[in-house]
Length: 254
Length: 377
Ligand SMILES: Nc1ncnc2c1ncn2[C@@H]1O[C@H](COP(=O)(O)OP(=O)(O)OP(=O)(O)O)[C@@H](O)[C@H]1O
Ligand SMILES: [Mg+2]
Image 1 (tube, rainbow over the protein chains, first blue to last red):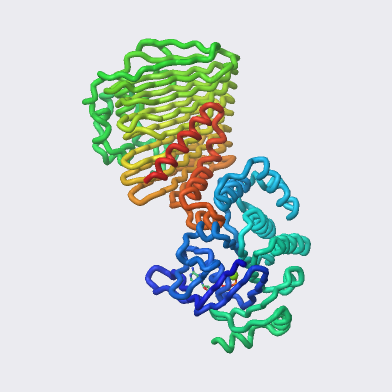
Image 2: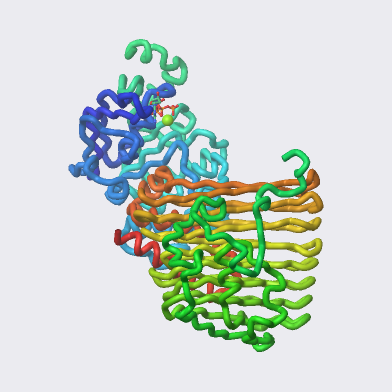
């Protein structure tokens, strides 16, 4: 059974040229096992995206101590692309626009890299079409440049399309629900649930809202404040947070 | 200044002549020469490069075209263009035979005409004239390869309502030096498309210019270059809008890699007082892939009338965007391949615009070759 184990993770971000790096994460502990869905909720600026980027290996973030193990393998020793090939997937809060690279070309390269061999063209086209259909994405997007000029919601759908085509073990979804209209929220949630049902997969879902948690039921909810997890609970914790806000946690961790 | 506002600044020092002796030997400080490493011109600029080598000219023409090799005294030679710098005048003074291609009136050439210029070593001078008579249409490929120290002038005379698409490929061997002027003269409603691809050579300095003789002329100048370590690839564009209601669009993109790779792009567009209704845009983008490479990009748009339909310019040189690479890598694509995807994308939109499929494929293959070369560094 697949496991993602985050131990005492400290992360700094490269600040301005003449300033020392600034520590954002102050010791994060979290273990996700296949079959589990963990939600992380927390105020703006508390370090949720930093955690997501650090797991994916974004060059701006430096891990100063702690460990991340994927099925016992040291993720922090891996390059960004190795992490993805090992089965880590990050759906970004702000997906990047890449001019000149078409969606279909990009997806084919990514699928080839992750599988270790090029998919048969016909098979790939079929999978792509089915994936786009399931997420109500117009097939014309395949020829467009990656994320270029996509609306916020369109970008998020494409993140989930990638999730479905790349079939990772663990998906970190950074505010994938933000900016979605009700229909898109449902379509995207269904995509996430298909991923969960595949088995031997785990989800780390970062969100500000309980509305997605009604579609994608979490097993655990973690409260993130000032760079660490300050409380853990079941799905009921999400409702409490929505009702009461983070004030008590922010005060406590300040 | 003040009173002289009708005279474009960029032409204040301009001086044209067929005779090389009318130009001083450049010292390197002149505006027109300040980016060019004169020592590497092998004497093309100071009269010491004596013709003794050869650039073989081979023409595979569409059957509708007239192909002639003529002497210096042919009246069509030098009719559209008067050299505007010393090397150009040197080429004009020194060439022996010119190639003249004529697309007869109202004729649509049935296939691209390919002129292959193969350097066989040594110093050579050349001259080419392409006349597209009124309402005629043709596609032309100028394919430069081999080794040479070569200076030449090319005149494109595009008649009323005629259309000429030119692809000029500078695919020289590593040691070649090439200094060239491409001048297009557009009659009423003429369409001119230039696609310049510069990849090879120790030093290439190509100066495409466009002049309009009547309204309605439409010029598109597209360029792509890939500069490797030690190469100097320079493109100097001049579009001179002297008549009303003409259009010009310039897009040049280049990638640079390796120690001493140097790209120079100068884009002068002049809209004179009488050129009302001009529509122009020019763009240069450079992708600097490694340390030690340098891109100089100088767009210069001079507008002397208040009545333009559109006028703009942009220039940007930068590194590959880390965020682009991160995104691709985060989907499992290895770093080198991610780089290639982004670079291919950078050029891809330009390559799509090459009118000749065979040339498009060749340029695509050439870019792939450059990308492979980059990979093995
Ligand atoms: N490159 C950077 N330079 C300086 N500070 C940074 C940088 N990246 C992140 N930070 C800081 O780190 C902190 C955490 O940011 P992060 O994006 O992880 O927060 P978040 O919890 O995802 O917030 P949100 O809910 O708004 O998405 C913030 O205070 C942010 O300003
Ligand atoms: Mg965030």
